[in-house]
Amino acid sequence: MAFAFEKLLVYRKSVDIADAVCRKSEAFSRRLGILREPLNRASFSIAANITEENGRFTKRDRRNFF
Image 1 (cartoon, rainbow, N blue to C red):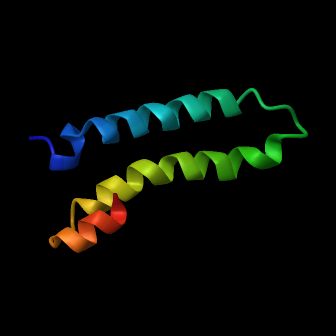
Image 2 (image 1 turned 90 degrees about the vertical axis):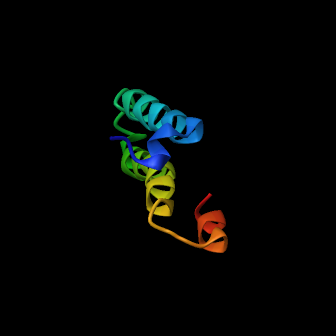
């Protein structure tokens, strides 16, 4: 049984973006390595916010996370 947010196209795209960012950031040079972790966390944050929205019940709360 899928959660409601897993059916959203925006959620699936955000997971794809996070995967792509992680793959691309692995190739960063040593000098750019300091950017790897914040960039990965930011890309995962998009999907995490959509997931967190699933637990909200009012329209106002849900809008905040979208």
